[in-house]
View: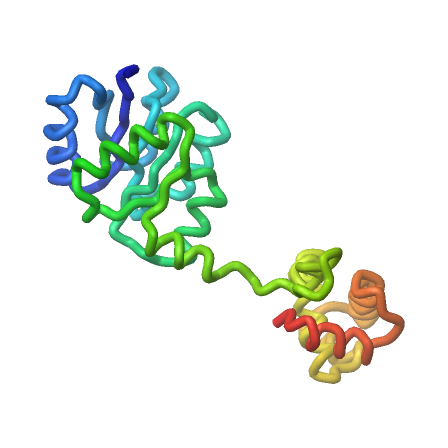
Length: 220
């Protein structure tokens, strides 16, 4: 088995010391370095890339999710495993979206941690079962009666800009173009243009149809 090289990024010194000692006596794993902040790890990566990075999420400056995104963009061969105490749904999804190859909790026993690192190094993905349940629970419900438009509602929302969504909310409340303009501090012509864009993107011909479609699609 090829020796797996690792970096540990954690602002808690005792955590870094404990894991360094654990891996030191195993020839299958080699700790190349440990860091209390993501910036130091990124700097070292310029000179020497590790196979695996155990990355905490809450760090002094740059957080672990932001660091993971940078690492995956600059060093695609390096795999990041989020190693954290947090079971937060948004943090799980954000970590995965930014390229993490695993998400494990710090209470994972050391024997299992080694197995997980080995699996991820081999190209597999790993997530604690309870964490996986949490992530999958956030998947939106599909329109199961229409295979061609299973997630039409999501596509509708993604097609609108933040400003257009803001205008659409006001439109649902029955606001006129002048009232919308006053609310979002733009000219009436600009508000009218936003409404026109919304009608086009929602494939409707008037404000009432737009409001009804938005409500039915549960866009808010």
